[in-house]
Image (cartoon, rainbow, N blue to C red; front, side):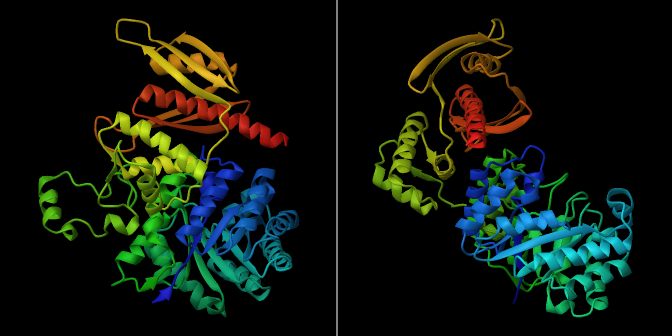
Length: 506
């Protein structure tokens, strides 16, 4: 089987999803997991866009060893210099440069002629080759470009040293039929196209990003660009887990292989969702909460007799274990540590001790502790923001005939603060009390709650997005008590804001 290179752009295109902004350490944590997932190429950011993006690319380039580390750059000398500088210490590095080639983009956005665009593309590739051995070129909005001009630009950049040509369906305009036809046309009309790697990058505006990517592979592309959970601009990008599992499941029609370790897919999906604050829809293919659930009686009967009747993939193939119940309140630290290792966590002694304490607290509140609960506890420890404010106590009085009131106690660097407030509901009251303690005026942009596992005693996870002074950050908190989880999420967002400001000042 021929290999398809998996190019992950979660940290670049995926981060452009509204509200999904990531701190440097969060990008680094996702990059480490992508390396475990064994993607071939990681597009780590757009160094010229901000100091934060530059630093993230630089840090990832320093630390990761196996993947090709890629940075995006417009066809501008300043962008390419920034990308080259950020990638300097990478083991394997690539600059991905681009310029639009469609008439609508050239006329209204670039305000450049075809000759000017062609010249800029060639010069960008030539300059990028001075910094890195691999140069990828993308003709933005390729799917709406004039074919003859598109072929001319591609041929010219190949002659100047481009090693990868990426064909983006930038606005998700194509259907699988015409995107496949476009890829075949390039193969027929661009000399020596077989000497470079042909790539596809599809957006999901019409819900066809995965189908278009598969059509591109069948037509000759051997690199596919995608994001975890399909996050990205507007309706998102081709979903990594969908493309990879389609290739793994339908080898009768798609005789291709990837290097991806599919058993890390679920963990990667969870991590990206937690750090970006973008929840995975329940009916999302492959990684959605309902992807392996069966409610209809006929389906349940069939699955009990033979899982293949209604499951074309197994839960284990993406890293979900069949046996969820693993530990209880009488379990010891050794058994807990071994289980965390089997779930893929490598925690140091301090992280393990903290996770075990949280596990004991949870086990006292729940009858059963599931793998999903343990994954959540492990993820809490692998990326921790310094806790300036810590919730010690919360008490709520509420009802449909009384004014909801919350009293809480918060510790800050050894000092204890107690405050109470009333609100439209218990959560609003808790947030008002926290505002009084911290003295911060935050704008709550979004609030979401979901259960980590099933059952009436399920661990509830709350995600909030808050805004202050033009900045936005995501906070997360979990508890079997949703009021406590809500307060923890709000404080987590505040701690993240403080941490971000401190990092900017250092």
